[in-house]
Length: 368
Image (cartoon, rainbow, N blue to C red; front, top):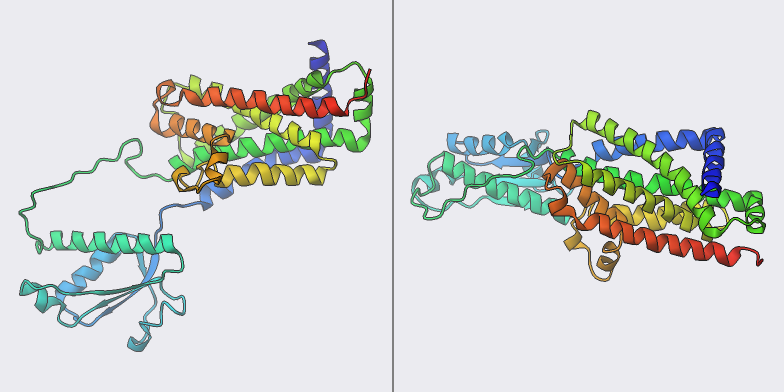
C-alpha cells in the first residue's frame, strides 16, 4: 500500500509541475462544456421558409400567421413570384408553401383545398421535422378556425413527464458530463504513462520491485483524484450555467461517477501501456474513446438507431451507462430503482480494463 501511495504522490507532483498539462486539465473541459452545452440543439427552430399566397384572403393570411406563430419557421426576404420555386435550389429557404387561389372558396364550400409544400430533402431528418410541423400547424389551424368536425370519437391529451418545458439543456448537459469525464481523465492518464517511456524512467520501474499492479494502482489513484476535481468543477459549473439540478437521491449518481472515473483513468492507462509516443496516445484516446463516446453512447443519437454490429460496441461502453445514470439524476429522478445496473457494469468494465493494462505492463517488465 505504501508503494501505491508513494507512486500516487510522485504522479501528483509531476502533474503539478507541468503547467501546460495543468492548464489543459482545466481549460479543455470548460471549453467542451461551453461548446457542447450551447451549440448542440436537437430541436430545430427558425427554419427559413418562403410562402406564396395566391389567395390573399383573411383566411389564407390567418393560416400564414399560424405557421409563424409556432416559432418553428422564419420568413425569408421577399422575392419575386417567379423565384419561389427556385428559393430552395439556391438555399434561401428550406421549404416553400404555395397557397392556391381558391383556398378560401373551397374551404367555405366544405371542399378540400390542396396546399403545395416543397421541402429541401438534403437533410432527411430536417425534412421530416419540417413536414411534421407543417402538418401539425395545419391541423391546429383547422381546429382554431372551427373548420374541423367536432364529433371526434378519440381525443388525445398529451402530458410530458420529467421535462414538461422541453428544456434541451436537461438532456444535453448531463450527457456532456459523461463525454468530458470519459475523455480528459483518460487523456491525462495516457499521456502520463507514455511520458514514462519517452523519458526512459519506465526502465527504472521495470528493474525495481514495484509490480505492474502497484504501478497502475498508483497512477490510477493520482489521476482518479484529479478526475474527481474535474468532475466537481464541471458539474457545478454546468449546473450554474444551464440551471439544472439533481432531482433524485444523489447516492447512485455519486457512486456511479466515482466508478466511471476509475474506468476513464484505467482506459487511459491501458492506451498508454500500448502507445510508444504521446501523439499515439492522444490519437488512441481520441479514436477509441472520444469517437465512441460521442457517437455510440446515446449522447446524441438514440441507441436504437445504431446499426448492427456497431450496436454491440455500445453495450460495453462505460460512457453509455454513465450518461444514462447522469440523465436519470438530473431529469428522470428514479434513482437506484431505475439505474441499478449501471454501477455494476461500470465495476465489471473497470476490472476488465485493469486486467488488460496489467498484462501489457507485465509483458514489458524485466524478468527477476
